[in-house]
Each structure stands twice: as C-alpha cells, then as structure tokens.
Image 1 (cartoon, rainbow, N blue to C red):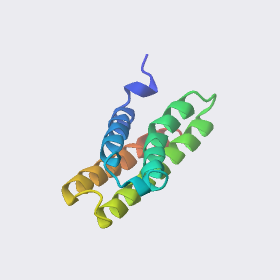
Image 2: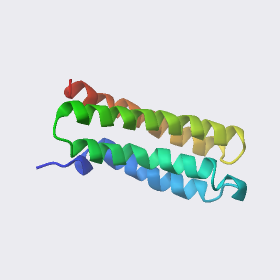
Image 3: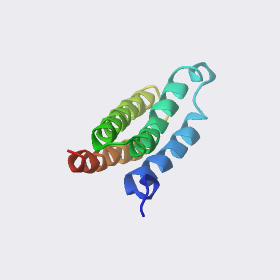
Length: 116
C-alpha cells in the first residue's frame, strides 16, 4: 500500500527542504531569525502538510492540507525571488529552485482534483 511519502510530490518537496537548508546556511547572520527562518519553515510546510493531511479521516480535510502545502510552495517561490534580488543566491540557483517549486505547485493540483 502506498503512503504519502511514496508520492513524487512528497519526494521532490522533501528534497527541496534539504536544498533550502543548504542554501540558507550561507545567508547573512542578520537574516537568521528573519528570512532564513521563514524560508525554512515555508519549505518544510509543504511535505509536513501533505503528511498531516494524509492522516486525516476524510478527503475534505486532506484537500485543505494540500491547499496549505500549495500556498507554502508559492510562498517559498517568492522568498527565492527576494533572496535573489538581495544577492544572497545567484541567478542559476534561484532559477533552479523556482522551477522546482513551480513543479511542486503543479504536482499538488492532482491531489486537489482527485479529492473533489
């Protein structure tokens, strides 16, 4: 039986959490409690909400958590753009990250549609 951790969207979002942690460790010290913390929380919110939603008793609740995950993915996309504009990450890194978060957002459409 498949679990939520077997889903490609979960695997990619988990991979991106690890990548966000790697990238943000080099942010300026003054961002530790600001952008670094916020970006990390938003990134791990995606797979965490998938796991929590999958453990709920009905599809309506699961759908709500998938929606929250989708919102968190959008939040991280903006944070990546901001960190690029601030010069904390290079264009190549930001483009790669944004592309992955756009993919995650698209992948999250499938469970939302299937849970209607």
